[in-house]
Image (cartoon, rainbow, N blue to C red; front, side, top):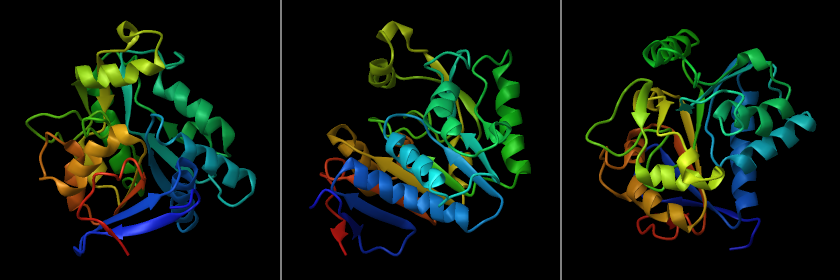
Length: 263
């Protein structure tokens, strides 16, 4: 596959899952940005759910470029982020509020007061979570949710476990997630051990979902999410039931898929 190429794949089932495989991370990011920008352009008042992590960085860079070129307008967009470390100060350069300001919000024409990230310093996390759910519901729900995926199949900070948790909640991070995220900190010891995260219900009630993933480290999680059984031990597997979800992958992340064939 050429670097700038993006191919559509199907497993032959008539469900809401679409899969695109790109020849490079840049092609993946441009495809995702085109989908997100197109959705925003089709609705005057738009609710956009956002994710952090390295996978969406190219998407956000491309959205900023499209905004600079007047090809997408964020004036009437409201955003809600999936998650935030807990506890952490929003001014901390490892907080997700800082990440979003740096990598997207300060580069586009969005009203910063319309951007929402869970408060990592909330004195009562239960109140913060319930207020977040209420605000999303009052606003009419998420129109499009951007997702990444963890090496263990988590989406947001919904870690593998016995259940799918519906609403926004506090979660104790697994050692594998702490280890994976330690690359962004000076040391593993600095990674917070907990987070606040939208639940699976928040994600599944989004009208549209775009999941981006790149690299060989994500290949098993992608295979489990798309071709495995639906189980809370791979939280992303629930996306098989969503009526409108698009996976945009590079060749390495898609390398272990067997049922999906080019169309």
